[in-house]
Amino acid sequence: MRRKMAAGNWKMNGAQAGLSVLDGLIASHAESPCDIVICPPHPLLIPATTRCAGGPVAIGAQDCHAEAKGAFTGDVSAGMIADTGAGYVIVGHSERREAYGDTDAQVQAKAVAAQSNGLIAIVCLGESLSQREAGEALPLITAQLAGSVPEASTAATLVVAYEPIWAIGTGKIPTLAQIAEVHAKLRAELVARFGAETGEAIRLLYGGSVKPDNAANIFATANVDGALVGGASLKAEDFSPIIHALEKS
Ligand code: PGA
Image (tube, rainbow, N blue to C red):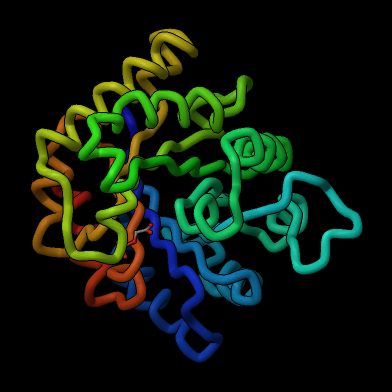
């Protein structure tokens, strides 16, 4: 049985004054059977972990550097993230791959750094609209998975998020059949690489325009173990119904 996960990616949004969102989630999901994770910008990691200590909401970061320390102006290492009390880090988000040129090898190195520092790496992958229309979605995703996921991953240190780029922030989502097809492929690849026990236990999230009104159908899809949510994770009144849908699924 894979424990379900609802992860919120705040991207470059939020401020200390807005952390009361977390109180709403903590109050509504005190006995949640799911893992609930919020990934705020780096300056909010310490106030967020402090506010969420001992409760049902865990905190993650949105990216990390692969190196432990050094002359990397503006970057933050996985060890620094772990030191805030956070338990997760997103790596390989398409916004990093596109705007900063993160390659599969760099994403893998970041995920290795995350796992070596006791963080769970949420490794993102997904195709663009032109790649989908050209019939390249499955081969691309397979290559991204092979190149981005660390060799030593286990179900306790890795979560994979399928995020079609054309569905992020657009209000468009793939058909449930398309989501099922990609997730089945990811599952098969994980089983082939890590063996049945680990491959079946690694969680697969869907991300891209998950909203309260489409969440239940997405969560009913085979091999979807939860969601990585952007815009709808910014307010408890949007994210909480998504978590409730996951709890009921
Ligand atoms: P969205 O973003 O839910 O706003 O589409 C998802 C993501 O980028 O993780």
